[in-house]
Image (cartoon, rainbow over all chains, first blue to last red; front, side, top):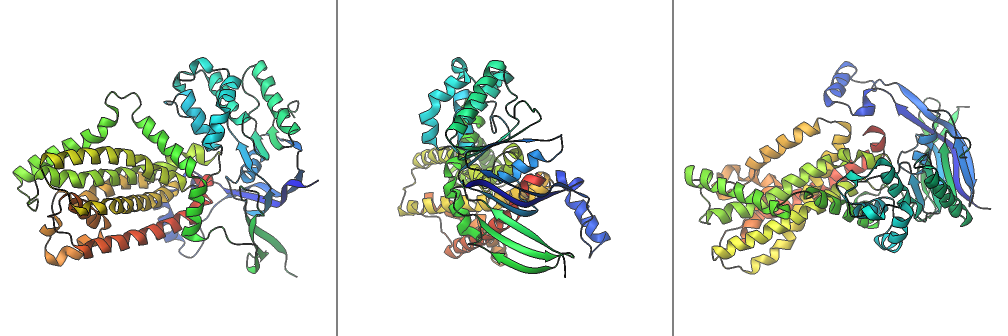
Length: 215
Length: 305
């Protein structure tokens, strides 16, 4: 079996302190004045340290860990959002990362407009969105409100719409971050079915959760 | 025997082609003792940017489309605002600088003189402002999804084009009203528009990358734009500037472009081609440097923003 994901010696370090949240130019200048030849002082934390593993094609893998264990960082590095400090990552095939439901949703736009926007943000082509549009609306169950700006949606409706778009992605590798914890029991069942559908079609799924039973 | 650890950077191609890696071996004190590179480097400058942008053109289009949609949602006048803003600015300029201060308009009717410069100026200033803020206002996207970050300032430059075109149509109305005959100069228009987009995008992308790290940009940007309004021949003709300061005016790449936009609609308006060529050169240099700076900061953006 070929591997979909190969990770070797992966480490990711984050700096602590003001640099994390945008640094004022003045502070940096003061720092340079104080220590003209030294490097900027900074505390750092290793979110990931020397992580290695492989995921085979078509496998569904769950990652469990306490809060702050580095699950999200790992998924961020895998989905190319964050760059590793060191180590190697190989992901084969088209990757879709769902670190959040409804990324890029805009309140003022209607459900219909947001489906196109969100689909495009998640890497779908316009044609793909058009082809799957009816299925997405049907899955979300918000068809009556599809031309209403989503600022009038309930939070449950927003989540359902977001997951509906995501469920119609057709990636080779799907990376999911705790998004299963959305919606009522009925909708959760639908989501789990969608995940199983993905597995049966031979896709690789990597997801993380606090919830052992979900894994 | 020094302890060796591998520090690697790795890029994953969306199509599933073999990844491009560059690996550096460093000893315990952090000194590089060997480097190895497989395949070509992803950071291959401007050509790489254009290829990436092309791959993500639909996303750029949808983000621009979103900006336009959202801008005029729940407004009664909608796209008319794209005309109202330059129109009333022009009226005030005519009264204040034309009638009161009696600043020369090079023999061009006041409304044509000001409006033809205001249309590109408003595109420029709003694009630099929007693109400059684009990474920070879309930080939700930046930290949740991968895409080439350059798509965001590009979308700002595309989205503002809609307003630009609407006000350009209105400009045609003004020219027809003043019965100014149009000539072959009009062929220069698309070239000028492309240059204007390139210039506004370059500055916007530079400020956007800087803004991720230094939020000072948020305060500096409106101020810089305001100053630039006076450093550009918008309320005065370039010919009014004394000969020995002409070079200073020409260094501002917007000067040549704005004068060019006037020349396009008023063929009798003399155009200094040296002026325009210098604008083109400065624009190209700005584009190359700002894209290079953007690329160098791109990898850390999601961690800092």
